[in-house]
Amino acid sequence: MHAMDDTSGSLPPALPVFPAGERGPGLGIAAGLIATYFGLQIAVGSLFVLVFGVIALLGQPAQGHDAMMQSVLHRPAMQALMAMLSLGVAAPLTLLLARRKWPWLWSLARPPGFGFTPPRHAAYFALAVLAGLLAPLLGGLLTDLLAHGRTVTQDIQQLGSNTPLGLRIPLTLVVVTVGPLVEELLFRGVLLSALLRRCRVGWAVALTSLLFALIHLPGLQFQWYGLPDLTLLALLLAWLRLHSGSIWPAVLAHGVNNLLAVLPWFVAINLPG
Image (cartoon, rainbow, N blue to C red; front, top):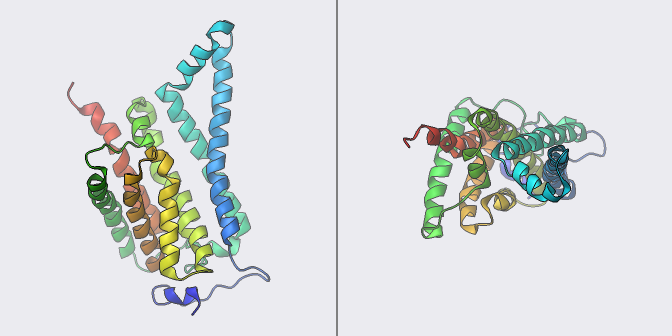
């Protein structure tokens, strides 16, 4: 039985209609788009470093260049600006590439469509909020069990806690809206659709979730015991995508999960001492 038949019980029955010669994304182009997204972030961040580094060095004596460069680029405000600029450029460009490449898949509810359409029932939005709240709690318990007392350090948490308050708010907005939107398109949209062409739903969801966790491993500073947390989140997001017939509940749950991760940025500034 074809892999697409496995989702027929949970998704609208309408069959996708493709232009002649088109069958949705393949694994190669899905992987390429994901690589493009993260590569754009690295490229924009590197350009930011270069430009601001050159500006900082203007008028400085040559013997102090290295120290000045390190001082400027390690300022929390600069790192926050670099993160917002990198994501702010990479995300819309990736969305535009996907939109132009597969315009007929954008609003299709069932895979290989990307699900930019209202869910089958509004209750899925409530389930999304619940999933976004429970995933980090349950995942955190599992992580603590595997970590054996070691602290899981995330780059984004360290970045935000050191960022001036005036930049924390726009950084939070980017982290809870732009990031989830483009990552859901890439993983629960393009990649999941590509995998469903080759394997059954269970395998497609498992592989997508594992890759989602692994690609965030650098942000966990390669602490492997943080992977089950991300994998659990990805499984819940895939369930929401497939059962709701829409990508929006997954985007909402992803955003709620990220919001919980950044709330300590604001709690810390109100603590005594």
